[in-house]
Length: 139
Length: 325
Image (cartoon, rainbow over all chains, first blue to last red; front, side, top):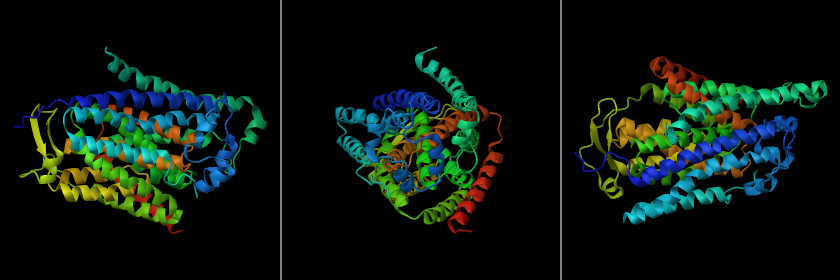
């Protein structure tokens, strides 16, 4: 029998709690912004009838004909109904980075430099992916 | 009722109401403008703009139920089926597929972590490798011609169907000696088997080959937008010797990290169209809730064979589409 606890470690519980509220919060935001979009409360950047013609084309065609920015360019169009939806999507995609940030001090406090280093490296990988350095520009 | 229980109870109910609103309000709104608005909003395929998002919402709801009952992730069914039967280009289907898999994994993560059925210490090193490689996979997948990706996707889906058919996971694999890498990374733990109350120790072996395989898993997850639970579980369980419940839980949690990095690449490349991505996510999440409740009365073996049949069909269809047949 191991001397380990059957209970989840404190850092695991903190991670779980943060993930729980972040995930459900972002899903709720998505539903609200989607309703604003499809009900036409905020006008979209790409008209609804145009987008149904573009979604069967490659992404490059969608970007050029829809005049859609890549990377974080969506942030400049945040007040358009379609791009308003990116708030919830980005929050959902960003939750893991936020949760990982809580792990670094927790592992350092436990004097576990190896796991702290892995957590730092993961934050770097995810931040680089989120930054748009890789391939923001379409094709 | 504490706050978490209240959210758990009311969350799905509120989402269900919003789901109906998502569908009904735009349909009613477009109906009010009569013929001129309908004609203006009529795309090339003859359907009004709300037709495909609505169809997707209900399709993903059913998909969510089936995925839970069959014990597979939503992404692995979503990508081949939606790319085969809906008018969306594969670029957008993969972007939405990753968000679908990500949302499911993020929603399941808290419960698994709190019950120690997902191990943070096991997941962290594996996730670092898989998430870095999924960025490369996503870049490669978006750079390749669509027919090449379709052919590879079809081949992968057929492989997954065969894997589901022949793989016999071990509930509690025997690990005689924990290897040096596993000791260094602390890849061991304890969990309580809920059905018996038994306290079970576990540790990993063959850690290096296991970690190397996650390079391939990460590449494929990013390239096809599938999620990778189908590959995570056999590697963790059969190769590394992790008990099945911890392997399944850790795999689900792993997806929340692996798919995050690939999802960002697709997001930054413009491969996420909210009009189709959000009904997919909401439909699949609600379907998963219903699926969990149906688990008690369903016949999982039948569902599993049905899913294998669906995968064989959709994999074959993707393959033929890629070959232009």
